[in-house]
Length: 284
Image 1 (cartoon, rainbow, N blue to C red):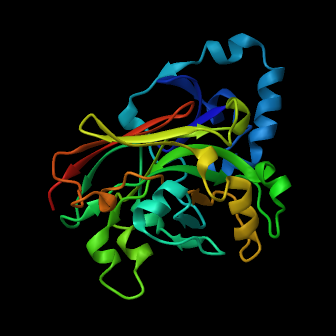
Image 2 (spheres, helix red, strand yellow; image 1 turned 180 degrees about the vertical axis):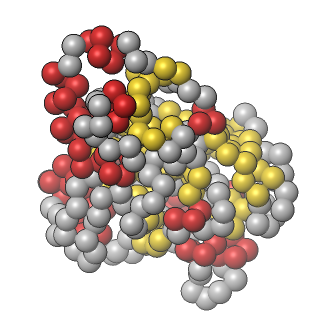
């Protein structure tokens, strides 16, 4: 299934710009909010199988990309994994640590898949990421069971103000990555069963038509089940939590000389089999 936040309501998609309002088509059997719907996705799938085809087909309507909001607007927690691709670790010069770098992003930085973002400085960097959305809570989740806790996947950008990040010692990851609009996600939630292999997805990023990042999630140092296992040893994962799973090589900080975003730049971030998100950078 592909589930989107269309004007604040949960929609089931039938195409890239068509779908149905889940609450409406089900006669209030399912909630209107995507986060509330997440633990109901299995039941929704069963309900859909029991419906005659015209139940959905006769109520399909279209929407505009600008109608899409963040897949989850109010996640209880947002986690992000740093240096999780060997290629990115190598370009930064960091050595492999026994534990992953984990930080948070704040929910006020979330924005939908099509948005204008005001630059906070002239050192704002890009980081294309696959985002996992938790649909089933738990602690001490074994990696072998982790996919059962994932409601779906979406595309994300971990925009980062490098000047702010390295202004303190040690670095201020969370604050530097949580300005307004610095956590765009979308365009919709794709359940793992929709993907040929949810552990091996091509992700990439381009700015103004130039591809700067391209890799596969199978090259992550710690895969999604491993991330979930590590996180849940310490915290309780909750329904609607977002996990930014890391970025591959090609960030601006790794260029010689460093290259950062400028007003007017258009960012396109994609994950094959899921979709793409677009942001335009504005001057502060």
